Amino acid sequence: NIPEKVTIIEVGPRDGLQNEKKQVPTDAKISFIKRLKNAGLKEMELTSFVSPKWVPQMGDAKEVIEACLDNERNFVLAPNRKGIDRVYETDVKHVAVFVGVSSSFNKKNINKTTEESMEELKPIITELKQKGYFVRACISTSFYCPYDGKIDPENVVALCTQFADYGVDELSVADTIGMANPLESYELFKKLNDVLGDRLLLTAHFHDTRGMALANVFASLQAGISRFDTSAGGLGGCPFAPGATGNVATEDVVYMLEQMGIETGVDLPELHKAIQGISTHVSRKIESKYYNLNDKT
Ligand code: HMG
Ligand code: MG
Image (cartoon, rainbow, N blue to C red; front, side, top):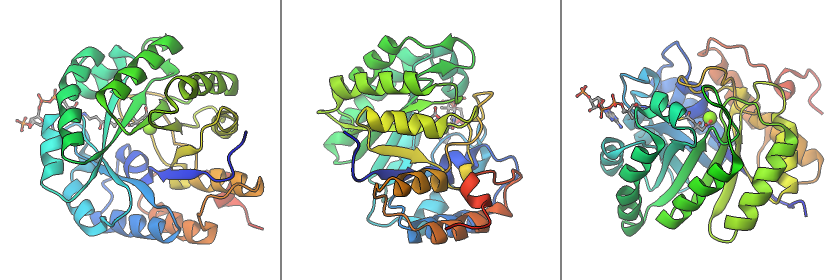
């Protein structure tokens, strides 16, 4: 049942940096992305078109895109009409929209209820699909919400189905604050795979707040998931989700999968260089296990 090959979607340049208090120089972001691409990470969230008042770190999105866009799947996040209009000013062809299952979280993150966001996104997604864009939908608080607590899996399935009906190509289903356990991960992804697996790509997005992310990756693999969002160096976190620490580290996931004989296409020594390069620009220590190993054999 476990796949022979896994696709890693690198989210370090976006999720990894958006929560960084110190403004990371645009050049450092660009070198980071180029080194990650050198390491074989093809699918990547480059940046986001959000309000620079809300997330100043992403204020240089256009410059980052112009320097880094290639023919691979380069995602840019956009939460609303204004964000989509900014996408149209670039050559980006892969857009990621994002919504929380929890309305309380969605309010804090994008200042709308979940229902209001879905209303705004419906015609936007139709338009993007007509224009030939690849649309990914990131589903936040799919397990727990920092404001509302445990989320009913039925609500996640319902929101995901609504997005499938809108015509998105991919769902990235997220444990925003790193509270899911492996059994919950298995059960939700098994259910989503049964209901929607034939209609679109399903991706799992884990944060590692409580050290359960690698176990959750393994549990999701067993549920038939073969796409994972990960962040180089384990950087990450959403500024509007207290408790969202780093994403599961790309290097730890790649190491685990390769050790199990699962192909990722990622070169660990090159990835190491990318992390080393960005490490001097972030205020957090790089805590991933693999990065800190002295003997990386
Ligand atoms: P708002 O204040 O309600 O927006 O914020 P507004 O429509 O009233 O506009 C206010 C100002 O923002 C206006 O400018 C707009 O032009 C501007 P002003 O007239 O005051 O000069 N504006 C924009 N500027 C640039 N790009 C835009 C944009 N939209 C409006 N797209 C808004 C609403 C959505 C803008 C705001 O709440 C926002 O930017 N939120 C983004 C929050 C964010 O980036 N969160 C992190 C990403 S999600 C995440 O990390 C979770 C994920 O990793 C999965 C997981 O782990 O759960 C994906
Ligand atoms: Mg995230």
